[in-house]
Image (cartoon, rainbow, N blue to C red; front, top):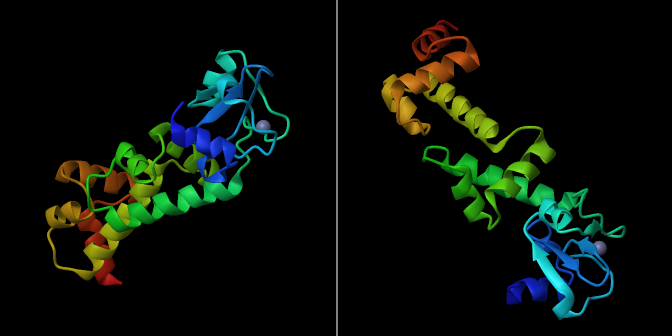
Length: 183
Ligand SMILES: [Zn+2]
């Protein structure tokens, strides 16, 4: 266990919820860091990255903080807002889930799970939406070539961009641009 994890447990720090879980050897129960139950003795604490890990080690979820439900909506919303903000600001870059996760100081797995639970979309689906919206805007409002537009919305490969664009809109970028001009 890292010192900051122990400090989070002692402080019932809800900001650490989802980042890790801790089990108490003497009770066989595992909790979220924010659990308000009595602070356990440090030597009895085991730290887990996921609820699965805790369960595999024979721990039961705490009835009080319900770590298995991940019902900490406040924290989840915060993560989603942060990740969405990053994607909206940096969609032109080669963003990966790993990179986003690093920015919000969580595991990629955790970011993916929370995002999906809160929004019904994966981070990748959301990012694609942002990129497609930006691409449409650029096709409508600029004279840039399709290659330039693709690059501006984070695609390194033009044919990949065209394929994805077609899948999403039913039109090629050029068709879309032509149609937009007529309206
Ligand atoms: Zn608990």
